[in-house]
Length: 278
Length: 313
Image 1 (tube, rainbow over the protein chains, first blue to last red):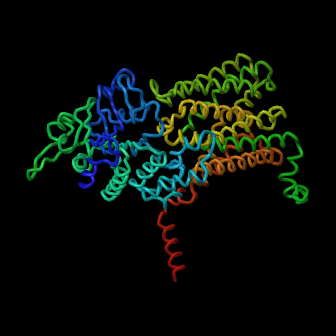
Image 2 (image 1 turned 90 degrees about the vertical axis):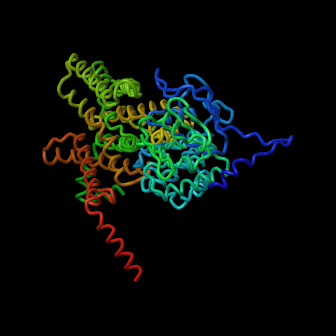
Image 3 (image 1 turned 90 degrees about the horizontal axis):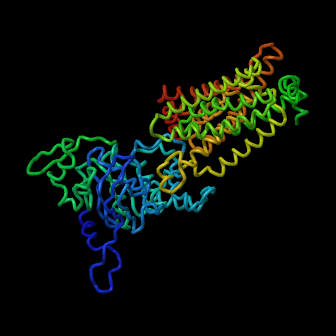
């Protein structure tokens, strides 16, 4: 994990002609974005740029606007003001680059679809209107499933998989879709430690391939060690930067307020939120 | 083959004798097409949780049928009136259930009872007689004209074609509307398309089962299929088969009850009761999902391990 963080400093991008350090590519650019439903704004004046190939944890209390931020980034919601640029393009114009992996509760797992059916959905644009996926589309989907270690599960009903496997199916769908930006909404809720480890291993390989991951989580124990950057949101941007700069009791407390407990044991600061997935 | 079949005395009595009448032939053709359409589109109703919506669409057709009835009695342009009313209701219900000010089931409840009341008011103003009123509410599949049959077959084929053409798109927006939106699909447009397809199915089903029981054709067989198979297209196939067989069985059942036992059970009631019984059987005995399997889960596993042991030895 640490060696990989070191890799980050020297991305595989082409170096510039004059020998300077290569410019880091911005995957997601938020320019003073305000957005919400009706007249109430869920996020206000959020400005940040997320570099390509980084893994960013998005944390904030319930109702902080995490889901709204996701929706704005994938282009489901038009900002009331400000602009969102995905790889330099307005988010309304993109349809494949960014993929959203929904919260566990947002999916009907009893829906009569197989794992393969779900992954092939990511290829809908390539398949084209009115057509059904053919063998070559299924091959791409199977390849994506292989990348998350689920090739053997292609014909299972989606509901027959475990919580962690279900998340991986949706990640495979995003890969089949060709997405280079992955938005994961609480992927660790209800997932055991081993499955969480597997998910991080998959995310590591994705990062090696330059995939940008923005991951909403309420599990603060992970953010200091498993992420390149930390995005603290509570309607406004509270802080954004590397975990060692941002993961500080005062910063976190100003975002979470009474929804968080902080204490010190053996010189270590422990921060816990009492929120559950919502 | 049919001659061979009819040389058997029992079969002759049960199947061939009724089929000599053209109205029975019409009824069976209609019920087969309705079975295909309702069983197929019903898969969407069940997986999207639209049973109440479908019931509402069925009932809300009544005002259109009522106006058509007033203009020409039972032989008036009933299907045309139903089609107009069905389209309007699909759009109105679609509009009120976009999510927002009123809860979806509340909106449906208001729109459909309002439409039903309007239909009843028009019928009573027009002094509809009891027999006709009965036919409109519970249907009379034995009274189909060949023109009605033609409309049922044509509209049914169009709906089946639409299901095939939009299969992938409707699957995606049903399972994961957010993915549909990120793929830049017209999610709302597809929802209205599905509502219109449901309304048109209700329209062609009105003479077979009447406004009251329309929802059963679109919900019960598909729900039965949901217990039996785990892929959407298989649900459509199995649902259609169940819907067709129950329909045919119901028509024959009501015929034989009235001819040989002098019991007048309307064909729509016979059809829907058959579907309900099939559903209950599946609910009890469906592999893995049936009540018996969930009550005694270990028996299945025990047999399985015995089999493995047996094959290993």
